[in-house]
Image (cartoon, rainbow, N blue to C red; front, side):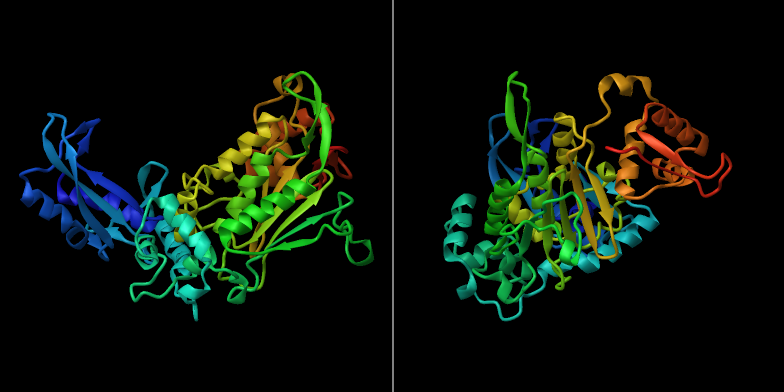
Amino acid sequence: MAAKDLAPALVAFANAEGGTIVVGLHNGQVQGFEGREQKLNQLRQAPIDFTTPPVRAAFEEVGCINSEGNSDRLLVIRIDPSEVVHETQSSDCFLRIGDESRKLNFTQQQELQFDKGQSQYDGHPARFATYSMLDAQLVQFYKKNMGSSDETTRVFRARSLTTPQGAITNAGYLLFAKSPGELFPNTHVRVLRFLTNERGTGARLGVEEGTDERLEGPIPYLIQRATQKIEELVPHRRSLQSSGTFEAAPIVPRDAWLEGLVNAVIHRSYSLSGDHIRVEIYPNRIEIESPGRFPGLANPRNPLEISRFARNPRIARVCADLRIGQELGEGIKRIFESMQQVGLTDPIYRQSAGSVRLILAALPRIDPVTAGRLPSGSQKVLDILRSAGQPLGTGDIAEAMELSRPAAKARLDALQEVRLVRWVGKSPRDPRATWELAEGW
């Protein structure tokens, strides 16, 4: 590998959540670098020579046995997440998405620059935070889990939980402080259960007495406590299970709402200090709302196409170390799969000016027999109407599905024939006519 060929990977990892590159492996063979000091030096200089601004990277040589059975060395490069957008020497910008370094176009690069203004927040120093404010038992558990006996300061520095000057970052404080609420008053998770399917207001507010809980603590404990409370409050209903017997099962599968909760806690915008995470449990659904919009590269209309991009890369990395989040960019996909496996409709994401709401509805998907008679994409029409929460025109649905108007109309007509949607208008040519879900859907 030429040193300049390393630049796209360095840039891609720095622009995302950081990562590790091992040089000296090729097609499953261990080649190593023994006796090639000049090549090693060129690779070490790659961040300075071929990336702009220079990517922060730590180089380490690790002993190994090469494919020929001889002692050799590998070069391990650890890249920290960056607060700025990096380019290669040829002005190309890359972002690590899944297992590839994807080249960004001008618009995508511009959006990444906007997002970097938010993503650096978990790397800012936590004002007034000291090591005495951390939960020593939790820190020790993390170190043991990492197999490290180093001092806490060294472990924190290795995971970018301290600034270059040694101050504890917001990420380090939120992850390990005994009481994060002292500096971040709205970092709690509020869990509520409602008696009716409608939220209501004032005297008609349907919150069940004794089920409004505010859960606090460092992020690992916060997720654990919120999980226990949600499990306690989620309604169950008897249904036929794969075992062939009727058993009580939660209205929404645990894997789906748990992944939604973990995503909310890890990826919320902690810079928005005036709001908190809410988990609202209704008789027919669970809703999870967290402060902060999707990153600029994401399209909430197509959640399965959202690229991996952590607003809080340091928090995400430590949670991955603790096996709380896998840091694979598969969280949303896992939520969809969990809902589909039990025959429920796809998750719905609604984005407002300052938050994202995930809706997990205990509503059935179109049954296989009916689905076989309908045009492809008919389920998506229902999901779009559910996501909107209001009637939509044919043009709105066509735009959301990225289809022509006639193609969208054909699917709507087919759904109307099986009484899944209803057309609402004053005349066949009414320009204000809309489509809405049929009762029960």
